[in-house]
Amino acid sequence: MKPKDILYDTEVSVDWEETKKREQWLLEVFDGILVPVRNPPDVAASFFDYYCETRGMANAMMDFVERPDFVHELFQYIIDFKVNKIKKLEEMGALALNNDSRACYNGGLSFTDELPAADFTGRVRPKDMWGFGIAQAAVSISPDMHQEFVTNYEKQVMELFGLNAIACCETVDRKMHLHRQIPNLRRISVSAFNNFEVVASKMGSDFIFSFKPRTNNVAGDHFNREDDYKYLTEVLKITRDCRVEIIQQEIITCRNEPMRLIEWSKIASKVSHEFWEA
Image 1 (spheres, rainbow, N blue to C red):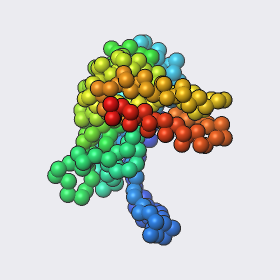
Image 2: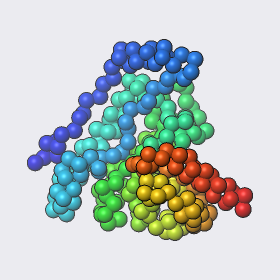
Image 3: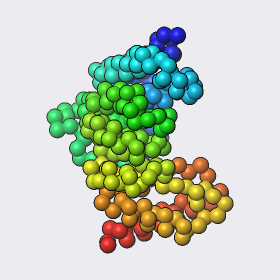
């Protein structure tokens, strides 16, 4: 098997006529209520997870050891296409600003006065946007292998963007020194599987500590409010010197009790205000 035998969609095109039709339909439906906006295309540096999904986890992990040259050739092939895709989308005028009320990929709101870039004239470029990198399947590989097979490649995509966010559910505590290599990095996802003390000490106030708390109580048989209050209080104690945002997004179920979400939000707000006022 050669790298180009791995199926990868290399077509870059925009159906502007259909896009205009959908815009008109939305304008009619939400007239006077909402203003439709065009979402930017997917420009995330997510090649690693794609490879593992395509090859299978066992095969992928063995490839890193037995056929590293094959993996390097394939990853560069994918990255070259991703970079060329982003540049072509820019030329086509297909990019869109993403520094607004939408979620910053898997983090909090995308609001920032640092985007678009100071020389922005109306045509969106990558440097006017948030970029994103993710490699959840790389959670179990060593930092050295992560540098070789992930960081060295995702940097080539993420250096195009004005600001970047990185990670999802994968742990970052062992690899913070690698994430610091990402250009214009601003937000790091810190899932419940991390060692918070390690992450907080390595991150400090340099980036947004995008905290994804556990969902055991919200999704469990019984919603233990006091337990969640103690849990959030402990995490905020550890991260007192960090720039923390709390994002509850990994909820599969609330056991037909949607009020749990509102109550949890009140708990998180209460804990946050207690630390803010302390």
